[in-house]
Image (cartoon, rainbow, N blue to C red):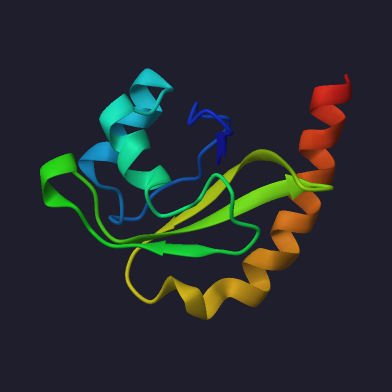
Length: 110
């Protein structure tokens, strides 16, 4: 899960699904500007619904699904699932996004 600027908040254990981009973000705790621009080209910063992002070998990442985390329209961050056909998890992930929204709201309000 990343904040609204692409900075790493937390990550789960990977089971062989990680790609060079994810490893780099986990180690550096930030998203490279060129990758952020590419991802924003899919409308993730303004979307209220999940978006599928195709693989981009030149930027070092596999296909993934972006779940924007919003609180009353305000972007708080993104939850990412790496892999093909991850849209099949939309319902379950949607429930998690509701819980994450509450946690991020608490984090911001202190």
